Image (cartoon, rainbow, N blue to C red):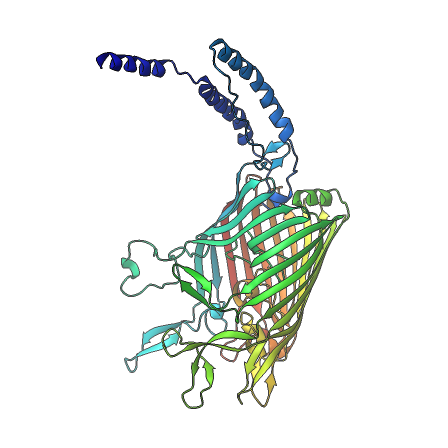
Length: 616
């Protein structure tokens, strides 16, 4: 036994000192050499553009250097393989070649003959401060669209009782910061995964959510509140190249034309998240044109928690969109800019037909009347346990028709968009208990004109647009509501047609009154003139003015006049090639009779915005 133990020990020891499987060591060396040879390619960055989220995918040149890149590697391995075979024959062993690498692995995306990084990241960081003074609409602060009147509790000097009075605030000032990220994962040459998210995107500095300071916390709290979602995921979608075109599926941003109907809101120094659609979209290129059919799950209605996830509890309250788009445009912004600088004529066009519908019933929280058994809608379903989720007739069928045109000719640029909506958007219950359909027929138009008087030095720009009016009163004051004041459900004098077109909330036409306070421009006309001078390539200053008015006297905020306001503005912007962005904008508003109400005549108001950030 001891002799066998000694021989066994020597045998094991010899294996430990003199390993017999040389190919394993060679494989490690090959792996190390392969990693070293690939590292420089990973370190070299491809040209990137941050103007749009689609730019990284659309501007790259796809090639197929797989055969060229793999051939040298195979030739380099042949001498090593021959030496291993000779060494094995000398030792009297049978040579077994290494298994060939798999060839069915997906090819990585190629740009300018070099592999693109597996992970790409785009976005921007921004910190800003907004200040407004004397923006008193309805004798209160201007954010009446999202809040009711804010009251101040005071002690009456005569009676000594506690009474509430309107705050009548003149100054509104807040700061905010935002990190917007757009990661792109390149799975293969034909597959990508995109997402968008914002960190602190909906956060005002000094707080983390909508919870207000209570008496018991106030100044005694140690830090900011921490019970809100400071990371907001806005979109997630996949991109797949197919033999007939590019397929996109998921929650994706959507912009169209100038953005009066749909805008993704992806702008620096903006708190908005823009428009996202849960969409299945196919882009088919044909001879320079693109045909784009799409299907959207617009709404699911009631959700129910099943185990640890949510499900769509009913299909009777679902809404859908189906659309067909046609475009002809330059996909690469850098190429388009180069053509414009070289004074080449460029024409871009787009047309869209979208049909939206909701099933025959709409989910609505309601309560059954004990006397006659009728079901009436209610808002207290969180408090009243007797409320039920009742389906009421809706029958909404809406057509959206939109077309846009971009024309660049020498020193001129002309962009325009026309949108028309018609159909039914639901039903309303009259005073006599009958349900009647709510119709809609509205039109909106916008134009953007530019003239480079001195290229790269002095430019003139004009923004103008018009939104159809309505017969109802004060519809401009209800621009956030849908359909709001446009409907009158009186049995004697009913108005069930919504006619005032509402511009997208993210369409900016240099108006603090509309873009910052009132919301969606509607039932009126606007014109904004801007003069821009470039002190340096990175530094520009601008001055201009914006005029807005109602198309009908009764449509205005107070129902007393046509003109709303004229708003002169001045600003300066700095943007260098490294991505740094900073600037200042000041705007003053001169109100007219369209802003006067029965409670208050609006006076001169001011708006100031200062920002600093970086784009990457």
